[in-house]
Length: 190
Image (cartoon, rainbow, N blue to C red; front, side):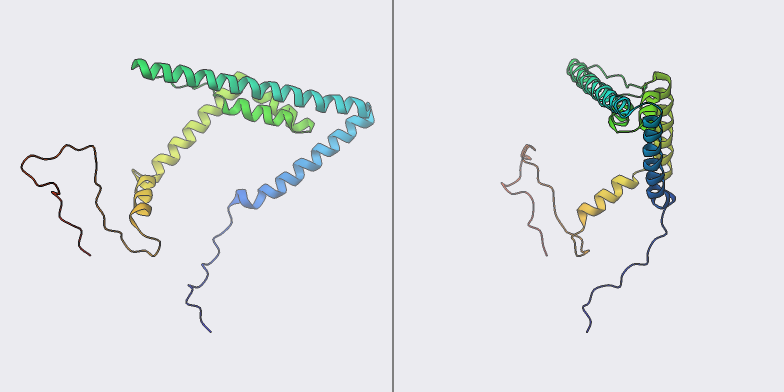
């Protein structure tokens, strides 16, 4: 019995990230647990608890600060746009890396806390922001002009069954043309 459904597409090869990310997460979790047990053996369980609590408090403070900073920057940008001034772009790493640092501090573990503290350093955030910006620019240049926009336009013009939908954009804000009837556009034909 045939259902008329197309045959399943052949599986695409897995990317390196998709292959090794689960393994990296497991190794990271094992390392975190091992380090916490080593610190607990060297000191006490209460010290480990205090370290984890300090990470949560510090991470929450960093995220709160980044949120307030983002709100202030947003308000400044809106005020500058209302005055007609082009707002400046922030190339210091912005709030994204501050939020990531806060999340790393909140996560229980010593390795994540160390990574979060390193990310709090302004030169590290600036270097990572520049690298991310260059990577994004490279990828956008490699994609070609209008590739995303063209794909988006194609998705809007085609119906789910693959047929092209004929249509016309009618704007209500256009003034009527002089010398034409009330309905200057001919009806669409099938």
